Image 1 (cartoon, rainbow, N blue to C red):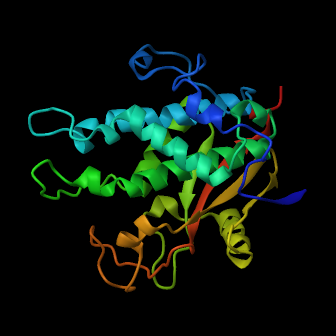
Image 2 (image 1 turned 135 degrees about the vertical axis):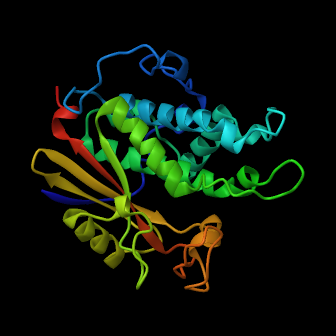
Length: 275
């Protein structure tokens, strides 16, 4: 059955859990323990939404931790900005997530509903991307005030987190876009497949003040695209004037705040949530 789902989580859940819950729940492996080889998880191992949400949160922390030398170290090796520390970064992403879903989110409330799980995961990754966009000045500015572009941008952050999450869970998350006019996806890995193209067109055709996610069962999978909307911090690379070079040399596409840039696509095997 085809369903169109709201991008907001149910109001009955508790957002306090996002901010107060331990960064690494008992079922999440801390970074330091990853050197111990263990059987790779598969996407057919039945898990609940709290597990997947915790794994994605842990993936965000691990990616930021792995890139501290790039984004948060002075020439002498000291911390450049406490806001770029892994825990602080994750806390900021949690705050953005809370703003996106409204009050009342609790990962335990996701249960084994694939649609609810997919929406929550897409929104959490979007929150991390928004946080990364807002932290670009801190990431790229050295202690002496010089600017050194690190290429740790939302798209790169999202790809790294998605890869980490897939290694942990076997579940696929992908950033994708139709592009705009003559400007297609900047990275070939972000090119949409046929289903994603259709989902993005539905989202764009029905876009309003709060664009809705689009999801449906496709064979043995539940697939969903959660819209990525342009934020103020995105305009540096994607804003106006269209065709002008952005900081990394890519032509800007001429987006304005609130317009849809693309989506976060999730493919969640139904066997991954069904006992």
